[in-house]
Length: 370
Image (cartoon, rainbow, N blue to C red; front, side, top):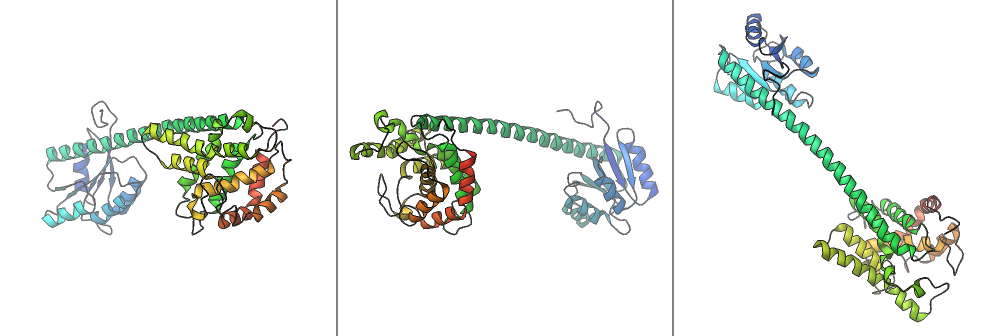
């Protein structure tokens, strides 16, 4: 590590703070061969000079009029802009309690007069070296943090792309869903944000968890990859036996996520949400859904949110067996499902932000070809 006070680096600047001209003259003459010097004859001026930047170390007298050295040091250390500038007290006050006070208010060292030049040079060089090392370490840490954030962002983008590819693989087998993935993940995020302050949901719906819900939502129908084409792509309503097979996509989705959890050696919040949504988004509040006929709060919150998002989008989307509902007609159907299909509080939140759902639907509307 090359330090700035070496013979090959730029000269560093020391501020001498003393109200006695002879002391200033002596210190300036001692330091001028190795360092640039600035001078202040009182604490207030010293604070202004240090705040202006360019000072690497302060040599500070204690006994000065108005603002003494102790208070000057306190103020330097209380200001984030000047707190990193090392302060060495250089004073005639030689009692142990004086030195203790100096160190307590933030000085890095305490020297007594009369001055011993070799000790002064050694202490100044030591504390400048430490300051330079701290500055360099902070710079390296910032650079490392920036690099980590960049790499983390790249990894997150790659993960998002992989998730979307997996979800799209399932959805493209059901060619009528179009932008269903993007709409539902935006619906669920909007719904979760609106419920953040609701006492039933506030603890779980943190900003971090809402991001995870948004990212995991596209995997809600990943289990469709296990459904035979003659059922998944049937141009009409499924019969009873076919519907029983179709219902298994919830279990297939759960099992797919479980395989991922086993592969990585455990679960995390993202995979937990993905598994809950894939497995339980077809459950209904009154217990009449599938695959496990869960009822009420036994249904994971993530799946209850997805149920609202998924059903609304199914209603407004074109299917071979039905034309798309208007937004108003879809909202009317959703209202009828309050307390039956949907968690009442979540459905109420949907009704409060139905306009946001309509906006999302328009932004990610299917093309005429879908």
